[in-house]
Structure formats: structure tokens, C-alpha cells
Length: 258
Image 1: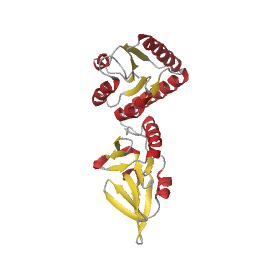
Image 2 (image 1 turned 60 degrees about the vertical axis):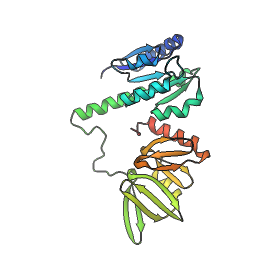
Image 3 (image 1 turned 90 degrees about the vertical axis):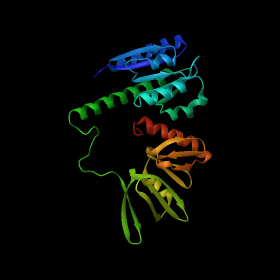
């Protein structure tokens, strides 16, 4: 396996050196070949060749801020593992709009830095293993024989219909009916959204008492709404927003949102 390129971008050179030492030490403990590079500004990262595999990026910098740099990098390198490092916790929700892997707040706790970098390295190594399986003629993802993806059995008027969970973009409840908005169209049946939520598992989140969202189809969100594929939008209840962000972050961390 080739070495992993880790770039630390911060206008404070003391922080650069601290994180460089921590990252190098952890790679050594894991016996992971790594190249750790430091950069003073986001523009330097844009010029890095090859691009970083893992990037620790400060948000507040003298020229272009980290969010601006992150948007440009994400467009060029969708698989880059991006970790924000900043003293400004108010940017946490914006961070996930650019597909951030994690968000670390200064001053950094050593155990938290190690935890996040360990997970980032695990993801990088898993992607490399998946690529090797593909190049060797494998599928690139694990297959469990002829097992089918999880599905629901919907009964309507004496007719039972199987609906794969990963085909459901979101569900809503109206007049005692559950309406499934799927990639193939809408399906209605009498039922309770709570029961569907329990069956659907942690890949779904209830953003509102009347709406259940499949996290794999989330494209963007605000504190008031979530936008999904096919131009669909659902509301987010105020008390549900923080929970939604946490669940979506966990989903992304597991590598399931790509």
C-alpha cells in the first residue's frame, strides 16, 4: 500500500508543528507509512501535488478562509478526508455542508486528535483495500452471497408489496397513511411512522414527527429543512436539528454517505 499523505494547514506554525509530531507519532505506532506536510495557507494546499489524502484545515486564515478552500478542494477531490481544526465552534454545521469527516475545536485534546486521526486512517486503508479487491477482479464491496438488501413488506388491499429500504428517499405520515417517496414513485399504506422508523434502522432519521429521511439521499440542509435527491425537501423540527446533525455526521464517518 502506498504511503498516506497528511497535510496540516494552519497559519500558526506552532500548531503546525504540534499536529505534525502527533500525526507522525500515531502513524509510527500503527506502522502506517505516511508523509506529513505543513502548509501556511489554503492556497498552498490547492497547489499540493499529489493532493492530500487527509487534510487538517484551519477555518480562519488571513487570505481565503478554510470553508472557501474546502469547497474548491471538495469539487476537485471528492474522496479527500477533510478535518477542520478551529477555535470557532459556531462553524460546526457549515463544516458538514462540504463533506467534512470531523471538526476539532482548539485547544485540541490529545486523545480526541488520536481518535479522529485513527478513524481517518482506518477509512483511508479500507478504501485502499476495496480498490485492490476491484483491481483483482472482485466487486469492490463485500457481497454476502445472494443476500438481498433489507426490505419492507407492505400490505395494501390484500396485496403484499416488497419495498427495498435503500429505495426509500423519505417517508411521511398523513391522515393515518404512511406515504413512501421512493426512487420509483410513491407508495401509500395504512400504518405508523414510528413502526417504520424502528424497522428502517439508523440509516434513517426522523427530522419531524411527520417525516422520516433516508440519510443516503441528503444533499444539503439548514436548521429548517433537508434537501434530498430528485429536488425533494422536508422540514426539520427545531428540537430535532442537533440530533439530525449528529446522526448524519456518524453516518458519514462510517463511510456510508459516499
